[in-house]
Amino acid sequence: MHPLRRPPRPALLALALLGGCASTEVAAPAPAPPPPDPGLAAILGRGPDVAIAIVGPSRLDRREGEARHLQFGSAACILDLYYYRAEAGNAQVARHADARRPDGSPIPAGDCLRLLKAAKAS
Image (tube, rainbow, N blue to C red; front, side, top):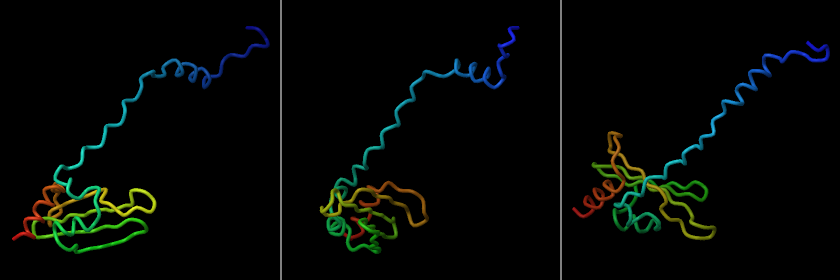
């Protein structure tokens, strides 16, 4: 062995070997969010007055900064609507909805909206 040449260090050798094993696969793009529940078309993108006109007064009206959370409920289900400003200075519109049965089990928000609408009509 040449006196000026040192044997490779084990850590450097391991890094060199691992570098040759790097994958060239491209990660799959994240899946698109599910489409909005078609039963919510009447309220998503619209102001709180629309939901109130459809199902009646909310049982909870909470504001947090620029956001607003309205909750509607009956013996059949509980619907939470979340309102945000579309752009600075614009009115708040419904951007998200969650729903559950009184026992906590999930129900599609559009189905809950239909049940609340029917309960108001009866």
